[in-house]
Image (tube, rainbow, N blue to C red):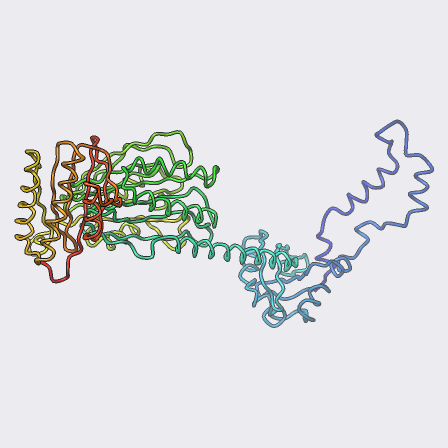
Length: 551
């Protein structure tokens, strides 16, 4: 092939040479007159001669450039030229013949389809950072070349730049990011509950899925905390950050929630405490959180929200309720008084708590994402884990999702038949002053007998009832109420009254006439506790674990 014919098609050299000659003879634009004679003489006599670009053979130029250059023509990519850099990289190449014999490395790199595309479209194409035989990486630019007047086919000029250093640096960066992400995911998963606590009256399931490999791990978390007395706290939150720092903050908040939950405070008071703690942990880090408490005796879910998404509840008829209000600002903003709200959660109901990764999509309204979740929940039946999986699938969450997703599903089963016999309630209003104590003992004895408890558990239950009622009569105010409740795992005894002073266990001295009731209850029961109730009263409870053969 006549290489001079290919090189003659490169434009622009004569214009640049003419421009240089014209500049030497033209007036100096910074002042008047021509270039000083001495300077002109220096340019012409002292400086080494600079040939015009047109005087340089193109082959000589291309042979010396550090980039790899190859010229192929025809649809079979016959080789017309390779420069010295190309030969140094891949070895000597014969000119002419099929490309797969002449330049097999182009086939190994996968460049032949690109050459075909350039020939068809007559437009240049670039492919970035392809690894070539020998382990080096190159960026290839393929430019179409027109057919020559002597009948040579059109071809492609292949220009390859060595980007190995850049590619290796990018790979090291990606490897570092992968390690950081793996560390964050490991930390995140280790801070989440390894096994959810199992309340007596609820069935729960949860799932956590980190974002895809291109997304940094966030600070999503969830938890289930049994409070005693049949009550259960449910938590879900999202730290507004990414990576190890967000996961670490999440772990601190989750630990704090568990500690505050043991105080058995109303949901809004728990969020108030968390708000102050979040500011102390990191003033620049905020988090959303929803904290809810379920009491099977009330059939409601009492909750408070700090900037989090609304809880969804599907009742026994399949109707989905969105618990919108009240919602305060996220944790860490400070200065806000949170409030508690409630939503019905009776037998047969299902509730869903979730983070924004489940419903938030780019270029899509958030309310539409929540509405889609409502529709999916309305048709999702089965166990909590089945519902959880179906909601995640319906939201289109995949392994390469761009955000973390946490979902917590709880169900309050409607128990019937033999199973229903294991969940019983009995209550007595305590009226009439001091005679209320013997009446409470008689009521408890009759109920425990009807529930067919063994004698030792029956007697312990009557004794605990007597002590709790006596404590309420001595230190509380009306109205007073005794409630007995059994589940498949425990007997719960609870006394409520109108005084908000919480009892505490203390060591009674020999001469003391009081102070032994709570100590006795704490000694004989599996657990005990107290909490303030809405309206200014309190509830004091204890519970006994049932033997497996009971009932």
